[in-house]
Image (cartoon, rainbow, N blue to C red; front, side):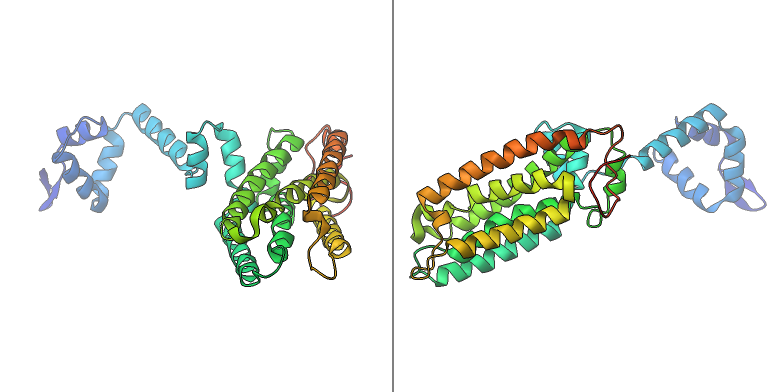
Amino acid sequence: MTTHDAEWHVDEEDLRRYGAGALGPPGLWSVEAHLVACALCRQRLALAADPRTVTAGWSRLDAALDVPSRGPVERAMVRIGVPEATARLLAVTPGLRVSWLAAVVLTLALTTLVSYLAQEAAAPMAFLGVAPALPVIGVALSFGPRLDPTSELVSVTPLHTFRLLLLRTMAVLAATSALSGCASLALPGFGLVVLGWLLPGVALTLLTLAMTAHVGPVNAAVLSGAGWIAALAATVHPGTGTSAIFTPAGQLWVTCAALVAGLALTATRSAFATSRHLNLTRSAGPWRNS
């Protein structure tokens, strides 16, 4: 250190070595602590440092600040081989947020408890009625322009909208199915009928996707949910309180419905293939751009 006006300052050699990145500890720590409080030494450093080194340092700082940090979901997907761009798009999916998943867990817990308390029933109708609707709600949350805060970012993403829709839907369906599967383990007394939610959940999800290009994700989810409620009401046996949907014959019909919905979704793929990405910020009308 050198003395100026009875104050300690960094000497020229240490200042030069610090500017070049060649000064090591403990001198490095002392210089950095001094520079925080000394405007004169900061000015001397700016004059002594190589302009190219300063420019390169600012560039590295800008790059580091611009790179968003990865959350635990995104890091996990990257580790299992999901491309970084795809992992980033999935990580911001509203249907995979902790708040939404917590709501799913709470809903499943309540319906499972109700079904468990009604052990004398032939089937856990509360659980079987709610579980298939959860992925449908998740799809609406994950691709609804009014519900997804990242919709404007998604609208300019260099990724086909149909593929993005499928990626997000598969992620939401996998998450809700895993949670529903765990909830099913809490109802072993009902046997295999407790797994009757799986095929209806897939069928409702495919139906929602097939209608999305024409009425939007939120309206499609509402229509699918209303249809599911109507189907349950129409097929419940008044004496036993069980639905024919959860019998072997009913599951076969649900499988056929899922296949038809899948074919309808494939047929509507062209509705997503526009010259520009679908404008996700639109709140009404078909999802087409002029």
